[in-house]
Image 1 (cartoon, rainbow, N blue to C red):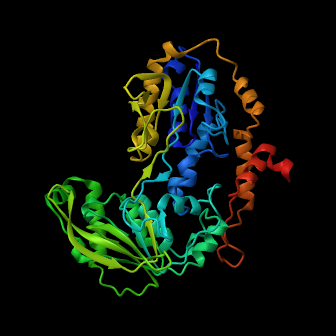
Image 2: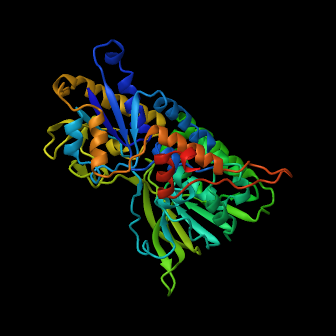
Image 3: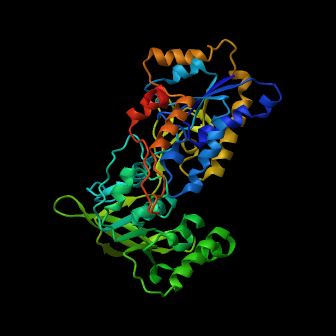
Length: 464
């Protein structure tokens, strides 16, 4: 059985790994070959281009993903874009089944007046910039002293931490050199994080929240009027260990009466929802109008009609990601997911489309962490294995046929060996984290797609 997985992030790699190590394969009931595709020249998806540089623990997941691809039983084809370089029909001509694991990389829209002003940004674009994404410019307009971040999830907290943290403290991470330069020159003094519900409903993880206190020369500012609780909040603080831990952290910060003398401040606001982004006569962000909310007893909130204006010169909204439509694949634009039933892709009438599957965020929406991604992949793979007798075709083209097709089309695809060359080249550009006098030195990563292709296609040694 031959299977193509489209998307080489955690969801796609886990699905490929589970299929190749499934019981049917181990027991000799099934022979399977898996090819992994990605539209970028590099694998690892959101772990590479969606995790902040100062999160080495999470970026360390790449080590596990790398060991899976390094076994040699899963082929990698990078820089191959579904719908542009290869169509669904071409995939189904060369494979028994196709699994879509394309994730969700776009920002969910912030639908308030002024959202299109100069200085209003989606958090996903900013994250892509500070992670050295090859399709984004090397510069970012970091000219605001006061910044608003809308959202109460981990992405919002990442954005707020990166904006408020001193750039020199990031030099021991994988931060690209151009990102370091931009953050170093930022004039920021205040970053405001807004959540529409109460502190007991925040979606941060305890680890993310505690990391805020580790930022040097950054004061955390809380507001007593935001600490209101309803019945559902009180229940969560008793029954939910994660909520309990985070509330203990917040309460500790509230009780800290030491002088606030840092040069930068990170403000955490709750029970406020954006009403309008304010602009000046030049069309640039000059402030944000927030509306107070109140808890209803069940952790939901109602707007109160009380407004507060904050002077800010930039707004980042981190209210969720949204999946993108895929050519020839039924799609729900409101949820940003492929139409599916437990991973089996279906048409608008709910009929299963044979041989087409989905996993990860493009299947269930942008929720859940790595553990959910693994269980999600297992569900999809189990259904694919249940369907295998109806799908397997002994007359399918040889594995080399897809390489011939890509070459005929002039697609400059990259391979796993090419990625190893690129990784070696990127690391050779990185300087040691400290110089001889103990001063931190910047790290550099390749961010240009053409250079990526050049290195990964010809090899670092040939290039030298």
